[in-house]
Length: 458
Image (cartoon, rainbow, N blue to C red; front, top):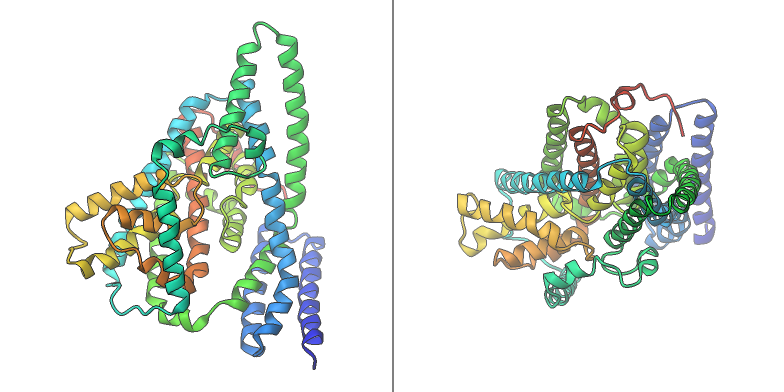
């Protein structure tokens, strides 16, 4: 059988699965249930392809077409991120739906406290599992990755922290709203806030002008939210395609070789999810409701490995299901994609630091080492705002600041996607926690929506 014909058969099977998911919708199967079923189908189908199909070229050809569904879905979500941030934050400030200044402070506080806790959890779990950098071997790809990371870090180090903060103020806000630039998300938030404050201050002098502007914002918001809703409808298909790609192309030999690190990473991630639930419970809210209503949001973050791609879903989840005002939801979601990420900027760098410390004669359990690690990790999660490279880059920033060698960050390249799925879900969970807590502490959380039984479907 030719490679082309075999690829067509694989694609046809995937399309049949898509029709099955659509059939479940017609049978009134709930959105979350459909998403879970799609996730399982993607994992099983992808794993079977890797076991049955021996020709990697064939899998690559089939995945290039199946990837249109998954990657296309992620791109659609990213397409609506900036319009959603802009209109929601501008409207919230112009109409003074919430005290944005205090809310932003509460959100940042939650993000920074939780990332500090996550760093401590990562360090303790890494030590409990006895993980060490000794004995890890590097191939050509790992060496090349390490060299590239060194170059990236040198470029970042050449840009002082003052310059990084200054770049949050956009010279061309419309350029930032296209997603370009090192701080595009925060730059869009800043520009939207400036316009919102300007409109609010203009109310007394030109109320009719501001009323017309708010009417426009309301109309634009309705259209954007309609677009968001339309895109979110295809979540099960996107999740299935993304998981098929991950399961079909993962290097299982490398996964087995570094299995203990993967297990330890997910233990730390699960512990942080539990801590998120405790934080929600401390504020008088039900953790089970929080996680149940956020399940599809977290599943998409898990499969897409993109906090930014999950942002529209994160914001709508907070507003429609968890009762968070739009302004706070947008702030928490937007800030959470760049600051205080518990998985990528907290757990991962701390685990690597503890693994490396014994190789240079440092006791990773000493109070001084742990305190320094937690502080640097928390501050480092703020300092790498808008810089590409994700968890690996966050790790080399922390390792360099701790005076530790950064080569290990390049040795885990083979298992990076598998760990990154859990880390991204945790990052999104932290954004949700920050939004809910900020709204609750400001007495702006709609408790009725939060506690309501979820009846609306997508």
